[in-house]
Length: 326
Length: 246
Image 1 (cartoon, rainbow over the protein chains, first blue to last red):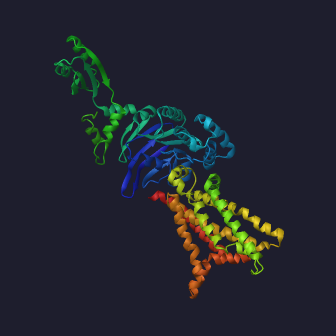
Image 2 (tube, one colour):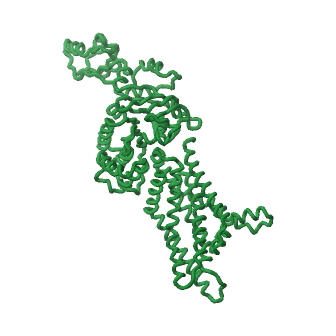
Image 3 (cartoon, rainbow over the protein chains, first blue to last red):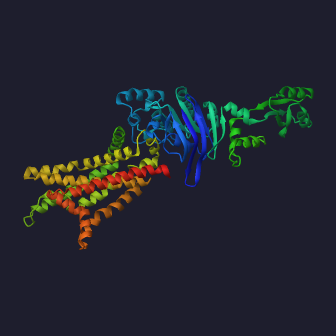
């Protein structure tokens, strides 16, 4: 659905997006992750046809954005980062305007609008002036306008930013529902959100893709050794030596007043050994748990590295074997 | 076409919902009404010369021009700069419409609203027709001038609005461009050399209105308004497009 080849965008001297390539297949929900200024919004703006790329190739829904921009834009529904609406218009009026702008025939627009209003839970505010709506409602109006013409690709830039937790849940539910029907590309800097919603994650930093894959894949390939958290009552003095001697434990990452974090080699589970060692010595085991490295750890690790020379990923892989910043 | 119409429709609605538009409408009516009353009472004086009231009404008082120089920036300052400031431009320019359609739609919305502002003044000739004879030819020619010069001024405002995110800057810029556009022609009499004098005379809007008020329609002048208008609208579309290359 989206096919981007060595997409580049420069603002004068500054390169915001530096030759990134990726594809999004039909029906996929892909999340784009990255710290602020990584080039997420610029990438999305190119996909939606708001900014042309300085270099590279881009097709959306089979249409080339450069040679056939108007047709390509028809394929895309877009919710920009700071949902900008006309404050003096009423919700239904705004949707009618957008339907016309997208070229929907009047007869088709009417049922489509009422259907969209319903699916975005906007019935109660349909006749309200947009300027008086809360941020959550405004977000939903923006979303409704984006999906109104049934685009084949839906692009959402930070769809939950600035919402309260309840609104975030509502919007996420809506997005998940839409994801069943449409190809969806969303950007976010909130990691659990991407983990929750997306089939695939693209992590970008300084205009380059630093990692790509399903949340599960990323975890497996970037986490390295697992961490086991052990808490013992009254901190027995001999604990560090005993724990370090347990098979499968590579080392102790940190330990203070009875709380130890053990680094274990992958594919081993020394929890039973730890329990037995504790039982033998009559230690009171307060906690014994795997620390799941979240996407957050991977993200922080990937995006806090020094800029790497061109080939990128292989070298990053090596570097990631170092200590996990916690 | 549909793109132009949808942009124009929204823009027109925005005009009618904004208080500023009503302030402008009120001002225009007050000033025009006052001028009309002054002209009629002046011509009522037996010592005054002869003249048709509406001939004087169209462009022969400073008020006519002051109002026009004020109305054009106010009507146009919002058109594109507000879309850019609020960010709605992003949604607009990712819809399947071209920059040209957006600019033309917005321009025609402003022009239609401008015509709406002048509509009530049709009451003046109608009023005169009740008490005397009105020569409708010159009246129509006068309105043609109001339309032509208004169209030109509004296109200048549109261009200014496409250049900045700030409505205030757009309004000031429009004013700054309209002042030379309006005054250059007035300098006509300062020059004796033929080519310069002729050029300035061609640009002398006051002179044009005087002729139109008498019913003389010189197509050269209309061509001037039209071509300059098209140029400014075209430049606005280009300016809107330029965001892509920065």
